[in-house]
Length: 155
Image (cartoon, rainbow, N blue to C red; front, side, top):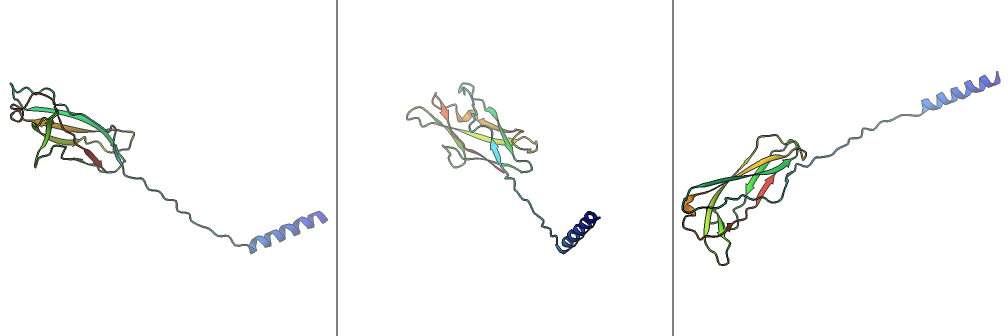
């Protein structure tokens, strides 16, 4: 019987002590942000017009597909810089031979596909189209021509 009374007494003391303690709560807010990013898959590409034949003098259209990705939900924009041989309103390829001064103008058009951005696991395609007019190369020196244009993608 003494054991039972001791157990009941201990339980009563514990119950009264619990009633004297006050509980409290705290709401923890957890945050993060996902950076909107767009990246080209490769850091260089080539748009080759091939051999331009002045005997024919036809316009030459070529294109290259460049892969990129963007963070899900962002809208990307593209920009093509003027190039190394810009002249007022035209990009131009310059003759690469030592002392070469001839220039061949060309146009560029940038067109991304219409797929949604879903992150780095799914690549999209930017089509870069270029055009050289036949009348712009029929009287140029034989040889190689080139230009360098920086493409930028921004989320």
